[in-house]
Length: 352
Picture (tube, rainbow, N blue to C red):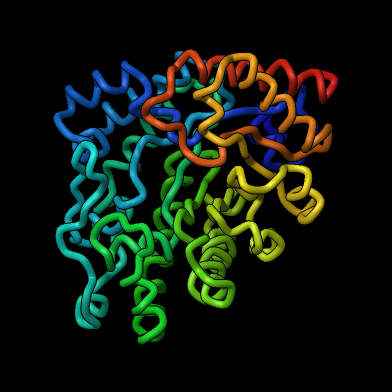
């Protein structure tokens, strides 16, 4: 049984207070991150330099009493390792130079070797674990097959990812071929992160909520379950808890809870109490404060935190987080207010 309250919460074991970490906790809202990014010269260089990725991973841990660190990287490292050419311009978001637009493009894809093609990520994981000195656990992550396929087909962000949906509708066999190679890549990538030292794993299904129910089951949920189950056959990963976060997919919570994951991430459009009632004790839950709350006054932030924790109650299996990533315009002091409020209210509610 781990001494880390984050890992205990994922295992739905008793904790003295509700653990908290923040999606995108190493990012542009922190002045120290912006300084390191400037030294790196580009976002991609920052990701691909293990020493700098380690530095920014540890920055929020030094600033706040968080209960977990998350590897600083990007979900598009896998498409980049497949030869699609990742670039990230300030204010423009990620772009892939060689989007997948034809059956031949997709047929030519092969799964990258994590320790060769993505060695910089594994080196960063090993370095971060060493530098953390077991102060808090380290989370590794990847994008979901559907979310990565959306970017790989579109070549950049989109409000609707209509090209990806059109391929799924017009030529489902080709879409499944793409999702298959990406799912195999994600599984190997996550297993390699666990072998390198990641103590929990997370899959970001950022665009799963764009899909109609039947399409979600076929093109997103199926592959999330396959990854969860496949990781069980990897010695390094089978005991590493897996968090699935499918944004906007609240209609599918029960099915997501049945995938074999340890926890589900929640966005802010569902009440924690409702989500807990629906999944019972099958999985832990992570979330789910609206990131916009961090723009409010300290008193309001503390009240919203208290309300969320009270809604979940004193039951085991809750990790506090935002319902999506912290935004670049947030005052770092507001984040401190939130973290302190979680610890104070979480200790009171749990009797710690």
